[in-house]
Length: 214
Image (cartoon, rainbow, N blue to C red; front, side, top):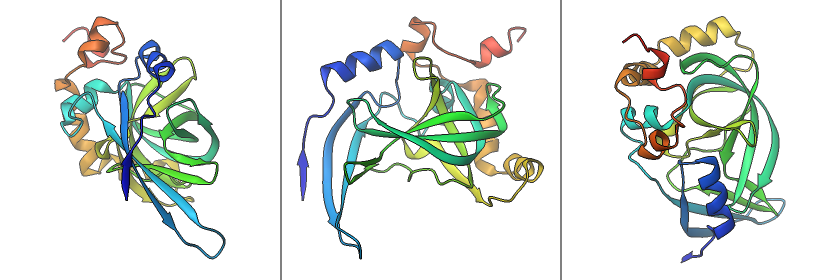
């Protein structure tokens, strides 16, 4: 059974505007299901998002992102509810930068997670990141939280490999040969920036700023 609820509060809207968090400005319809397990019933809530742009277009995805990189998920390190549904934080080590230059472990924040015994997920989006696995991640930097918010659309991330024991050199080689990685690398010079980012001088790591001589 499906029913709609309003969970995008005024406070949440203000917070998103202040941080220019453009990935998912509205959450509207929520579908609910209850699955049985050997331990206890688990309630699942699917959140429908309305995106401000067509992230299936690689040029738009690149333009809307501040940092795009291949990273290995080391661990889940937190979970927060900030008024717009649960979000889960992961420690991620960048393997290959496509847009921006990250090094060392960073925090990636992903919409969805478990809150009060309820599992929330994005309708049509990717599953929660899995520690030990390596992914392609399109993110926006949140200076207030000092983390990188993952684009929740299906285009915003892609599983690369699940090999917790693989070293950086091996993962880098795999990433460089990935078709999706190559597609986003090719799209970067032709990225389409979000108008709001241009107006607010928030187009971090834009191709133009990274290549001023071109």
